[in-house]
Image 1 (cartoon, rainbow, N blue to C red):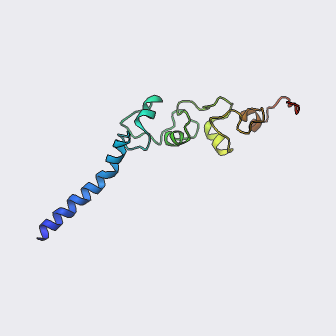
Image 2 (spheres, one colour):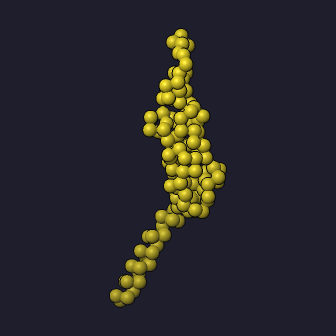
Image 3 (cartoon, helix red, strand yellow):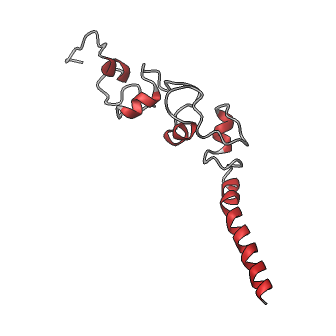
Length: 122
């Protein structure tokens, strides 16, 4: 009787360990790195390998953070405004919007202090 209970407990424990991996795989994340296989493939990352902590564009955002922010892990400046995605995150700008506050000046120009002129009439 004790052996049957022990065997059942071991089987239940093994199944419990496999459930998160099975759930990830069913959502299209075969490597379990919390990024969809489709997104990884679209951006040239390695599907089947946990590369969530890598930073191929060196913008100080991991692939996983780029996935969550919907930015491009292969471009340091997803929106092309002159600020790296990681810097935009730290300055609370939107890394997908060149002009986060809609004032007509690109985020990179505001943060870097390179605004040549400003016309308050426009």
